[in-house]
Length: 131
Image (cartoon, rainbow, N blue to C red):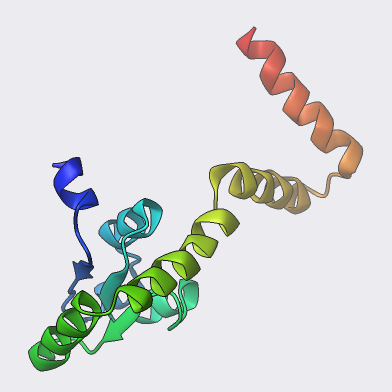
C-alpha cells in the first residue's frame, strides 16, 4: 500500500470534530507530511497548533463542499501542492526524534533540578548499560 500512497497527489484527513478529536493530531496527517504529500485536514485546534495554513489546507468539519473544493483545487495546482508539502516538512525537521529526544531529556532534568553536567552523565549511563 505504501507505493499507492506515495503516488497520491493529495492526502485527505477528514475528521468529525468533537470534544475528543479537537485535541488529537491525526497520525495519518503526520504520515502524509513525512512522505511529502500535501494534505487537506479538518480544522482542529491541535492541528493548528502544529501546522500553519502554509503547511496544510484546512477545511471545516462536516463541510463536504469545502472538502470537495479543496481536493479539486489542489489536484489541479501542482505548484500549490509543492508549496504545501515543502512547508509542511519544516514540522518534520523541527520535531525529528533526534531533536525531540533532546528536548525530552532537558525537560526531565529541568523538572529534577539537575544542571547541564549531570545531563551528560545521564546520557552516558544509558549507553554504558546497553554495552
